[in-house]
Amino acid sequence: MRILGIETSTMTGSVALMDEERLIAEYTLNLRETHTSRLMPAIDRILKDASLTLKDLDGIAVSLGPGSFTGLRIGIATAKGLAQGLNIPIVGIPTLDGLAFNLFHCKDLICPILDARKGEVYCALYRNRKRLTKHMACEPNELLKKIALRVKGQGSRAIFLGDGIEVYGDLIKKKLGKKAVFAPKARRLPSASSIAELGLRKLRGKKKSELSTLKPIYVRAPVER
Image (tube, rainbow, N blue to C red; front, side, top):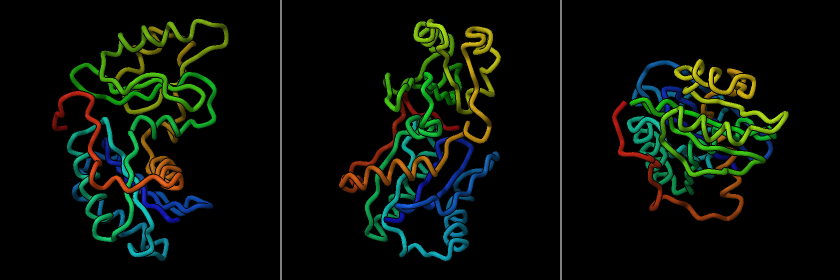
């Protein structure tokens, strides 16, 4: 099975091609440019560079949020349109789940945080490949209090990733000190390859297409950004 992954939940736009054996290609662009103007060209380019066409796709996985309302709307609408036109299955993957998957083998507490504006972050907590909390929108101080209770033990720490680090990195270090570690920049942002791999696993588990049920995860009332 060959799958296309689409990630547009933040300003970082990403598309990836993956099959059962390997990551074929991934394009990521972390620039303040709308996904409207760059998503389809990116899909066209990655297929062309991989010597493939849309007809070579067997499935699509798309990031569901939480994140930018506009970005999610563009990504999901594009993914649905392609899946319907090609008559191939589509599945959705929560953005925070995909982001945590960037650190798949990490044994520490994993905390992806995305800037939700209005003084809040989108977040969830993960450990040992399992999500421990619901997807949340909360104030950073509230989140850090929850994390502090979970990393009390010696040698325990929390690994942060996501664009929320750019906004709240200093606060995180102030509140948690050495208990807080920031993921490497290359693993810090949402990745279409993670969305693709999780989608591939979902489809391999004989999950049905989610074309009729797919919808964004907003966590709170959507705000244009």
